[in-house]
Image (cartoon, rainbow, N blue to C red; front, side, top):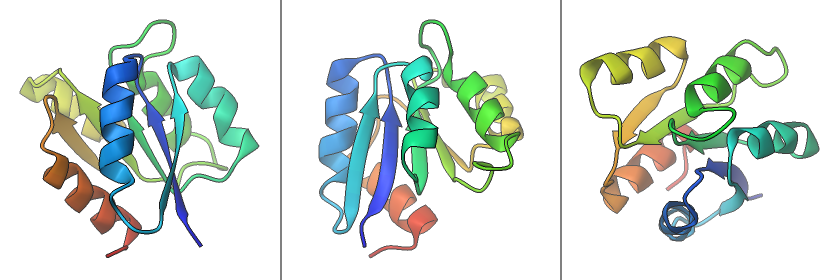
Length: 124
């Protein structure tokens, strides 16, 4: 059975890059959300094994998504990876403190993304 990953980013180009990177991993299926609101609407519609989210998005940002997921009994066990242009230590520490398992800075290394997702989903 394929592992389902929700990719949340307001940039269509960045979503496309992340999706094409993830789909190089056998057994991964992706669902895209162009903002935090779409992501929160998608959560109850399907079962996700992992969420990759940007931070800087209109309306509901990535940190709010992390906070929501980690504080909701239904979703709290979903691993979260932040992929963001915010690369300051304070930003990274805040994302991890809210509950993200990993924090990857943009521009990202596709191999790092694949290693991180494989590790968190325990796939080869």
